[in-house]
Image 1 (cartoon, rainbow, N blue to C red):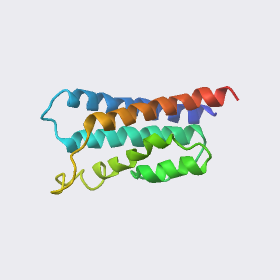
Image 2: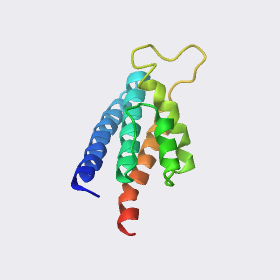
Image 3: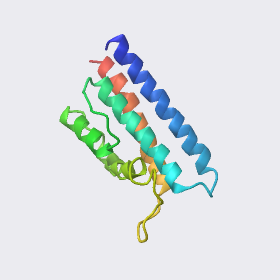
Image 4: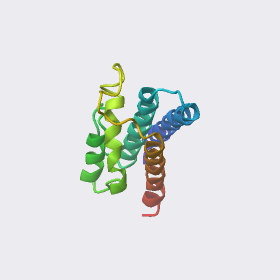
Amino acid sequence: MSSKQLELWQLLLAKAAQDEYVVDQLMALPDSPDEVIGFHLQQAAEKLLKAALSRLRVAYRRTHNLRELMVLLADSGRPPPSDLDPLHELTPYATDWRYDLLPIEGEEALERAVARGLVARLRGWVEGLETDESSR
């Protein structure tokens, strides 16, 4: 891995950690809006997926679409664990609901603890890529 790739990997992990920090602070406040928590969860997941793609030297376009990023990882031969598939449901928090009210009547509220757990598991998987690749 080149020094530029290593810098991007480290930057994306650090920036995702900042979003995770914000989520953890807001989750401690019951009145925190789902839109804001969902946005930062989506942003953390997006940065973690892009860190994984960078680590694996897979090009990606500028997007907030988590499913698209996960498909790129699968196409590279290194798909995220299947239990992380629901992460793509966070995409609207960075797109549709970033500048709109949430949720539309009849939609389910954000399951904060579940979504936070998915992002934490994604971080573990992404950080494990470094170990996996360095042992090859």
